[in-house]
Length: 111
Length: 111
Image: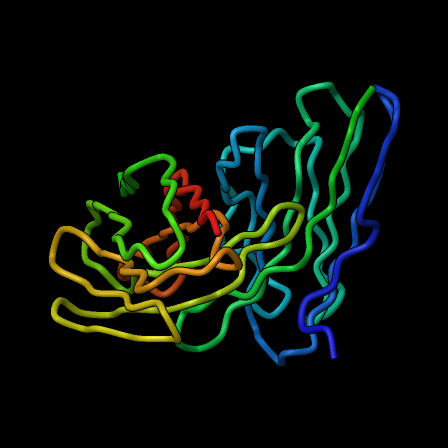
């Protein structure tokens, strides 16, 4: 029944490693997003895909690479992890009225 | 650049004590204003979308209103389970415009 799901929920890793976070939505939406929420709880958009096409790419280091194999999935791969990458990452999808529905989040801790 | 300012940062209420949360915004043509609720350790949960000044929407004890410069989330007779962080976001006109979030208001309702 889950609308937007993410895996894993927690990710603890060493600096310099490469990791991926997966996202899937079963709402039939065409547009999906990745957000980063920092320690002060501020939500900031990173990327948006519409029907597998990148449409928003905020000022994000190119160590972050989103990939959308189909319109129901949007994965986030991060190379050479840094301490400052520690945050909660949220996936979301958007309906035709503009309302976005968020996943449960992935808490990334870089040691 | 689109901006969203929420106030106060934190609000403590007694159960049954009604109050309002403020969201002031500047945007180049408003496509929509969105309210979300976020519980600790979870993703933002969609509450309301408002599209034009004068519009109001209600859900249980919550009522959202919109003017050309701000939105209010009125909470009538709150209960402890209303305790959460409430996020406001705006989306500018334009097919692929992003959501810009405020920093949120943390509401605590004491029994």
